[in-house]
Length: 520
Image (cartoon, rainbow, N blue to C red; front, side, top):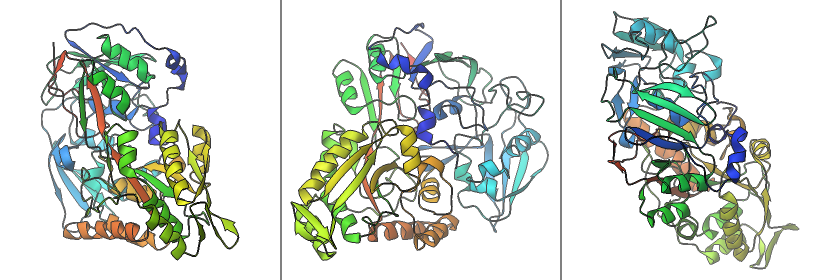
């Protein structure tokens, strides 16, 4: 996996941190034919092979062979059809005819092959299964390619929907060394300009798909949430929100709703999980893990801290992710059951404190507001709940850099994780967060063990009718072992100015919402 975490990339706007002290930002920009959307950090140059630009901005400029639709349905993109060989070791794609890049260059089999060979088989992208298993690409006429693999990759089609590097760049948009020089794609929008303050997009009137009703988008860099809300109130922004675009807190959403803004919230695709360190002697005790699991009131966290814009869960993935598995009922908080679990595991004491072998029941809870905004408040609420059980919980609040050092080294007892969400899951989070041999850099691991590795790998390699059962095997293992403590699924929250009509959420949080909109 990339060495930068996904949330770190999204929030990489340190150069503009001075803006966060301002209660309001006056944003220039016209009305009428321009949609103005807040982004938390600058888009950057949208290099498809570099992990430095905000992920949400790629999809408006670049198309993939396959698009990720609602509920994980795979939809035709630059490929109109695809066929997987019986042995799973090759995939043939029929390419859409008559497509051009926004600079006029044709999209055809040779261009598709050139693009795919820029990342398939390249070590930096070995975290993508289809890249790691790549052998060759063959063209058959102007509009068909066949990708040949060394082994079956059941998630290959899903992987081709992710944000980068799988999308397609004009062959004219590279320098003499083959490096991307400008962001030129086949998508519905063309980058007119980008800077530290905004990226301006103009409509691609030669786009092969449905063209937007308006001709311009201004992506305004506004790192501070209050400034974004004030600009929406003032009519200087049209749309704010989205975890990977410009996050909107539940409390702010409630306030904006009472002021005439439209709030759109739907179940999310990522789960917030409390992870037990697999290297912590304290958390190796199953009774301790069970006591944490039972001692937390998920419904209270969802209601009090998220204003109801979250859904309690004890499952690794929400139902908005394909093959999310059989659902488990969310238990009510049960202090007595938590204490009984500790007693059964050999701990003695009670609500005032527990000991075992001379060791006190004391745990280190690692949090970082920079890495996970709002995590300190959640941790404090959990701390109070576990204190009633008899835990002594020490909250270690650290900066982003320290979190990204300590979490991969398991230097904590408890800490927060989030699954990747659509379109990466379930394969993305399972392969990255639960397989010990995969390098996930600063993201760390939710849980690993020698016994778990083969269970997860079998699920990742399963296909067809066997896949669902194999995935369920992973979920059952994690649940039965109390290997992780899922908390809730936060809803996807956006706020929209009244002049915008027809707003609906895209299939993933990595997309800028513009489809179907009309502007008043």
